[in-house]
Amino acid sequence: MRFEFYYDITFWFFCAAAVVVYRLLGRYQRLRSLFLVLCSAFMLLALPRFDLYSLGFMILVSSCVFLAGRALQRSAETGRGAARRAIAAGSIVVIALQLVFFKYRVVQSALLRTVLHRPDPSGDMVFVLGVSYFSFKMIHFVVECYKGGIAAASYLDFLNYVLFFPAFISGPIARYESFRTELAAAARADLRGDLREAGVRIVNGLFKKLVLAIILYKYTFMSPDLDPAKLSRWSALLTTYLSTLYFYLDFSAYSDVAIGAARAMGIRLPENFNKPFRKPNIQKLWAGWHISLTQWLTDYIYWPLCRKLRKRLFLADHPVFLSNVSILVTFLVCGMWHGDTAAFVLWGLYHGVGLSVLNAYQKLKRRARSDLLRRYFRSKLSLAVGAFLTFNFFAFGMLFFFADVLSLDVVRGWF
Image (cartoon, rainbow, N blue to C red):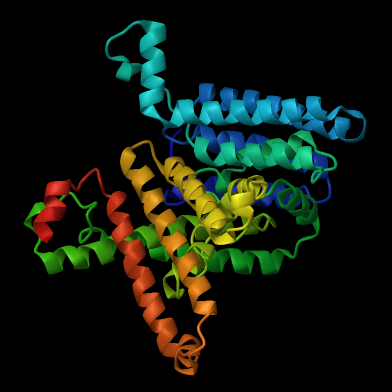
């Protein structure tokens, strides 16, 4: 049996059945956790691009990561620092390598060409759905076990954390401790309140996806009926805006439905969007766009890099420059996480540069002594101008996302 998540009636039939059984299990926490693992495995196997090999691989990797986490927990007080660092670093490297292997076709192709000795191994390419999301969850788990942020871990809870079907395809990226707390609290959750909130989120998500996004789709760069080369300058600008809005509606719809489906079980997932296009600068936009990813990148890339670079005397004396270096590296990783082409790397650098410029501007802004400027910075006009410029900056950056249908010559033709 195969069906698409969220927008196939078969999905909702099995999702409703899962909610009923999960709720009926009530306070039988271990049985409830086991049921949820089996339920998620069944639902994932129904995905068109997911099979038993994918599931087996995920369980194997999850088990290894869990064992590494348990080793870090047990050795928190008695283990040697060097051994703990080796376990944590080795686990993170292995997780990152499997992410690179499955996500980047050029890497996989080169390895398969070497192993299979075939000039064109494209037919043998291997893909694991959800690898970007579950890899980041696993890295979070290892890091927090190393830091002592996870005191004890249950194997069933960890499998649920990795496999949880509502959030498997497109997040949100929950944190292990928060998710485990939600699993434990689900037995005492308010059924009526949860179903009411779940219904609102699911209806909002489906309306975005099945009504608003569908209306916009034919006017976007993704539409097969639209030829970007034939667009005038102003038509291209409008199409860029509509494509950006479509991308937001489509992605936030997935998040709404995922959050709603989880809430029906009594499990609260973190929010993923908070009115991003109303934010007055790109930093605040990113604080409201794919929030769980932004927070993950901030906690596990940006701040560790800042702390490491701060040991350099020059960088310690130039905090804005230090922050900007960390921002550029963080968004380079963000771009590479999103896709395996150079366009995604450029998209990440584009946002990294934008945030770095904003960082420097904010420093100059704090030094302003003019009363007129200070009043302007506090005014609604400043917020409106900032939101307009921020949306345009983000929208033009989305052109990198549409690189598979836009060529450099086409973009040049608009100007």
